[in-house]
Length: 121
Image 1 (tube, rainbow, N blue to C red):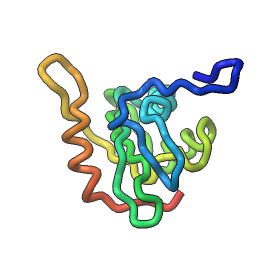
Image 2 (cartoon, rainbow, N blue to C red):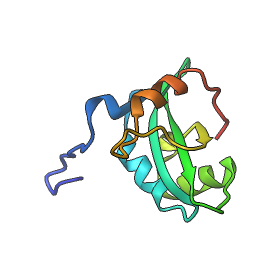
Image 3 (cartoon, helix red, strand yellow):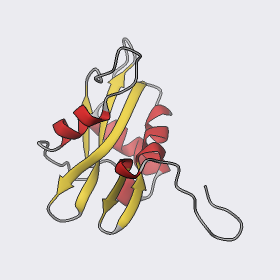
């Protein structure tokens, strides 16, 4: 949220801030855009290690029953609503790991993200 005095308040946990090439990226902001895609049921964004940028956003996406989407469609959707450096460099489809109360287990996604390859966006 940006205030009239020019200050910005980040509403995210520090471990959920992705630092890519010196830029701070809020996982919540990227997730919000992903949830606006009509095929997306659930989404989570975590940092993926990157040799050039330090970290890049990695999106994990669970699609609605019967819905389809490609990596390219998700990336194009994100490019329409986010600055280029915030667009996920990796998109993984599948059921998201959740706790018994339904909370997405980001720690498990961070583990998975560490072994993924990037896509060229």
